[in-house]
Amino acid sequence: MLLGWCPECNVPLADGFCYKCGRVGKPLPLKSERLLPIFKDTQKWVNNLAEQDHSIRPLPEKDVVFINELRFSNRNFIVMEEGREILQVDFSGEHNKWSVKVLCENPVFEDKIRGSRTETVVEANLDRVDRLEKLGSSLIEECSSKFGMPLYVSFSGGKDSMIIFDLALKAVDPPLLFVNTQLEFPETVNFTHEVAEKYGVELFELLPRKDFFEIWEKCGPPARSHRWCCKTNKFAPLNLFISKDNPKGIVRIVGTRRWESVMRMQQKVIDRNKWVPHSIAVHPIFEWTDVDVWSYIWKEKLSINPLYEQGLVRIGCYPCPYAEMSRFEILGKLHPELLDNLYSRLIAWGKKHGYDEEWVRSGRWRFRKIDEKVKMKELVPCSSDKDTRIYSLKDPEKFISLLKTLKQPLDVKKTTINGKKIWQIKSKYFSISIIGENVSVRGNFKNYVVNRVCRLIERVYFCMGCGICTGFCPYGNIHLTRNKLHVKKSCLQCGKCAGMLFGETCIFAKYRGGCMNT
Image (tube, rainbow, N blue to C red; front, side, top):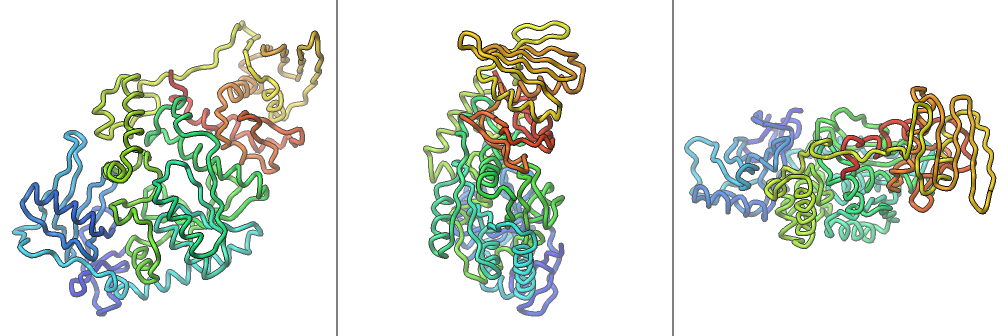
């Protein structure tokens, strides 16, 4: 990446060359690839901090000022002007406060810094943005017919979503697919509906089956190493939508970009998410920098989510553990009832597990380890010996349906005595007797197949009804009945769901070291 700065026009350059004045820009001393604009409200906030620490108010509080956002921070960033670092804004988790540090030598802040005009940013980067626009629209047009599946624009309400939607409109006539996690800022939900209405496109709004805080009671609060929330509130609704309405799969136009995170650098322009296996994800702006993104938005005069002007850098769920601390400050200003509810739940959970209130207020809850101060609630047999284990299941018929996935010939006999159902199931490796809610498994528990039988019992017992699993059968034979996992009689025993049932693609399996807390 050749980010530079034009001293003459006082704007950043996405490829190091200014297409307005024809000059080669000077290199930037960046600490990360993120070079972002901040708007009037954020500039005012920085000025208030600078006045408090240094009795200066250097930002113009108009147009835009660019900042270099530091990675893995609480929203620490460096303010850039004329290609040099002038201020650093930091949040201290230890002291739970913000501070401003002056970086340039002999700074002269008697006058406001110039800032950058959006029109000039566009002109300075115009040729590059036009090339990227053509490439992006061409990719979308190609993929709309290449895969033979319905195409949707994944719309999150953020700036990148707005760009891919605009690019898609120039190539096809796409519907919007909005996963409303029910953890969105109200502004994001409103903005999404406004966009759909303004452009007259169909909007598919997907909702999670389970309430976030209901799963919280079983899993504990999400953390950076414990992000069950993405699977239950984001990917699960997608899988349910695909399995019900598009069993052959869909193509999603997604606004992911390489420079957003280290993990996203490893993605490809066209790929699949393992949590949404029957969806092909196309990333037409994968190589775009932040300067490209904002240049295109200003060039096309696109509407943007009002939260950006309130200071948010990323649009997403308000309790996200990857969010910077400034997000929670903004949430408190805009929607104090949401922040109060989040913090009260965090404080209550923290007290129950040995954390003080400062652990919440300083943001350290976001870095909780999966197994830290949390014990897994194991499924213990009612009785067991060397070759027999007896479990208690409220709905054993769900377990019986899952036995089909073992790809084993089964001899199943069902009788009814005094109104009570009795099942006898035999295979080469095990035998199972089910009387009422009692499930007796007999076999060598060191055997691979018998061990999987016990894993299936765990799936039924711990199933949270999130729906993430429904996307892992290519024939739509996995579904939820009364919030419990069930396999239809039409199961072909292909075994393609094994990764979900026995691997890490189930929420319980993925987070078993800290998911079920006491």
